[in-house]
Length: 414
Ligand SMILES: C[S@@+](CC[C@H](N)C(=O)[O-])C[C@H]1O[C@@H](n2cnc3c(N)ncnc32)[C@H](O)[C@@H]1O
Image (cartoon, rainbow, N blue to C red):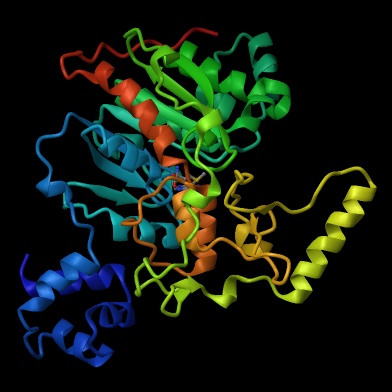
């Protein structure tokens, strides 16, 4: 890619101001380079690649062990885990423009990769062939009320009838068309009790009986890997019965799990000067993250009221020795579920976006190109990367390339 194309490419992902700041020049200079009015100095190519673009690109990768697609991709937590096993992402779907921005800042895809928006608008035949389908689909209410009536009338009912209008339907129609070797679906643990268990049984029924996959589920707590209680259900399916089992899942002992000190900023001057949420020589967490007197008083009063009613605490005050509650997508609002104690003479503070990234198992090289509010939402919605990595490691040996695609399985008759 020549320098001008590189600048065009970068400006599709970052604003002129962001590029100017990263390169230490003014925005006018960037605009002139972009307009080809003058030639950028030689260091610019390297500086863009080092500071703004992911260091590794699809096209640099040796031949992939398997291919996968990343649905409801968020910021790509699942992708990181499957790339770690040698997989190559060939298709991504995510409709939120801010999540797309974070994703694009961290994954550098070539023209052979498709980045789609709303999955409900993508025809299943337009999804490229792939070995593994990944989807952390949002859980929506399912109504299966119509099914028994249709049964009674002797009419066939397929997954289309059962799940039409839900995002699981979009996952099912892509599996039905593309018949990947395997899939991994992820959701909140509550999916198990949703609608008295009927939602999960509809999903499993479709996957097993209509799509013909061998399917198993497991609830895994992120606490094995990160200092956060975060339980998620993982649904793994294989097109053939390849003997996949959870028995060998490598989970570190939860009792020895890491504590919050491992993800909090050390505030000793060792962290980068470029991180805007830190300040001063010691790189202390910026005062902006400390709760205002008003918000802290409100949270304490709210908690006291609920304690009186026997409802437990309204906020989670933690130190480096603790494990955090589940980080939610609403953390940006008041941060109440995880407040870091700063001693009795100071109000507690929120986690910084970098600390949230670490709490979800992202490495410090992961770029956060969005505002704090967006970043909190994105990490709150994300998977715990090492949890998915452990599952990916377990699945990888069963994805050997020599399995042949079987003829499409007929749908079960009603
Ligand atoms: C629970 S998050 C998944 C996060 C992801 N697994 C990760 O690790 O970052 C669900 C994502 O689905 C996206 N989404 C919801 N409806 C969508 C649709 N119709 N098409 C594409 N993306 C959608 C949301 O914007 C959100 O980022």
